[in-house]
Length: 135
Image 1 (cartoon, rainbow, N blue to C red):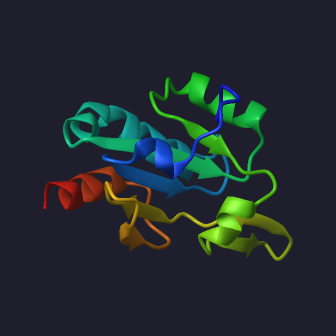
Image 2: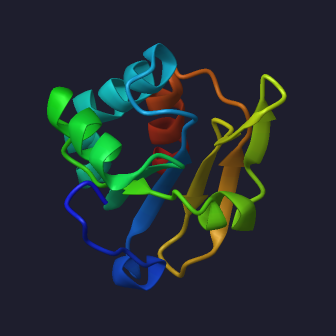
């Protein structure tokens, strides 16, 4: 994450996990999405949900992104693209750059994927995930 700490899903057993992949830290859509999640952090905490953001950026980029926008949740660095490949979200942009597409996985307290959203619109996505958690 932005602090250089490792995270595993096992650490979050017993809680919901909102694992969201985004293409590039500090870009407009990624900033919109992260800030909406940040602004709803108390609702996510009230639903016993941990937010984890992840992109193929390096730790330093994630640190800068998290500090610039006061993100109260971990943003994970995946520079080897292994996590993005494992979740099937690695894609080519402009024919050359490999980035994560904007997908979100809702993982249940037992560690199973309960819902996934593909190629989400960053605007309003936080509310959509919260609605699913409440359901």
